[in-house]
Image (tube, rainbow over all chains, first blue to last red):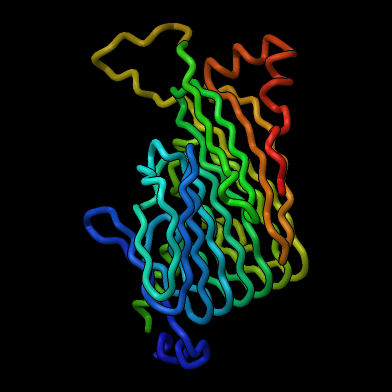
Length: 161
Length: 132
């Protein structure tokens, strides 16, 4: 009943879920783009209307406009040096490891994930940087340009103790 | 309906159980109404109306991985935190394009970098790539 009500209010719907192979599928009214640079992969996902995300890293429900950007190193994402974009259907690997993540939303949102939880009405933006674990010794440099994703760099240099 | 609400409530309260095994830096801004359930049952819920900005850094702690099978050194510090030197520069507007430059050294690299002022300057130096 609640889902039907939200759908009718939103007018459009997109759903995101993870499969057992570690792939996140998105389906619905959405636009995505993937830009591979020499050192990073920039994944941009935008939705309008009701967005239902059944994923562990970015789970939640949004009614309104939402933009999600993930910048991760090629070493973890397996860049293929090929940019792509499209509508209605997107696939991405389950987010894990280090990265830079941006969330912007306008409308009503219920965050159901470890780094963005609670109920929000209005404008919201979040910058999340996920770094290394305790034992890792490295130097990380991330330069991200939303207006020029091709220039984005994600350099990580491991230092031997 | 009750089942859905229960799942939502449990998901919100599980926030407090997040294992912070990685270095996390969170910067967020909100304009409007925000309501959060507290992970601590004794603390009240958090409700804000208006503008709110918060910056949080969660630093991973040394795990107590020295088990019974191994002898624990006398100077073993269970509460030791990850050494970090970091820099965060961002242009994040509500409706404008975002530009972020973040650099950090962790662990032994942070310890080594921290000993030399020049190394710190080199770490946090702005990029040579123009933003346009």
